[in-house]
Length: 299
Image 1 (tube, rainbow, N blue to C red):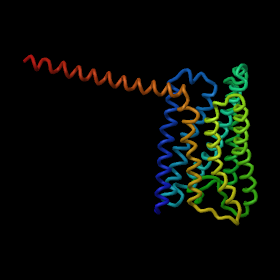
Image 2: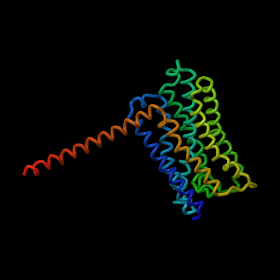
Image 3: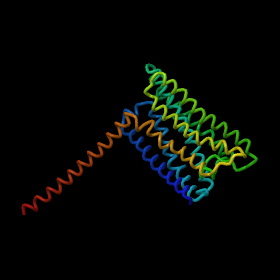
Image 4: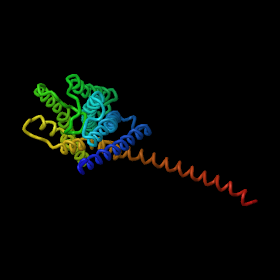
């Protein structure tokens, strides 16, 4: 392995560990706090968190193995399953971000009618659409054998091995990115620009979320450029773009959950409860040890 490959492998390991810890903490906060569970956006955050967790335990380890061994890890069926899951999860997480932005737009711009416009039933319908939308593209790709190990990204993802299917694959890739990534970006920009007119204090968070989307768009550019037979993309750039896409699974829990007041209060309460319990246990153990020593001293 070269120094670049070692560095990229280290980055993937860090991203994987942080994504696991941060998203598990979001789940713990969700289960611990009844107030968080009562909120409609909690469904979108829960869906986004599960997508990020599955990405961390499926796609990231495969990419790490691909960087280390420079070849497809596992058999074709395993790689196709991981590629299918990666396409589904990436699309689902982007649409979940769009759904959260719509929720914030309604909450800020229409605060008096928010509870009538965004109910749990409405959130469930939106989530149902995101799942159907996200599943449709990988199903088509898998049925046409357009899922496999791509050496450019060292990952199991969308990949066409047959030259005769090139035109169809180009059309499919363009439609997929337009209706998933570009659509989500348009929704994010529209909703948060509307929010900006009402609440200027959202500026910082909007900048972060927009930068997140732009980071994910970095993953699109090499995919579209590689379809041209004229342009050659270095494998290191492909893996770097994949790492940037994975960084979304790391930043999502902080942007949408852990840095918000309610989640901050929840995980601080959890930590304080754990520390208090450990201090009580240590005090009890010290008391037992002291009681054992008293008879010995009296003797």
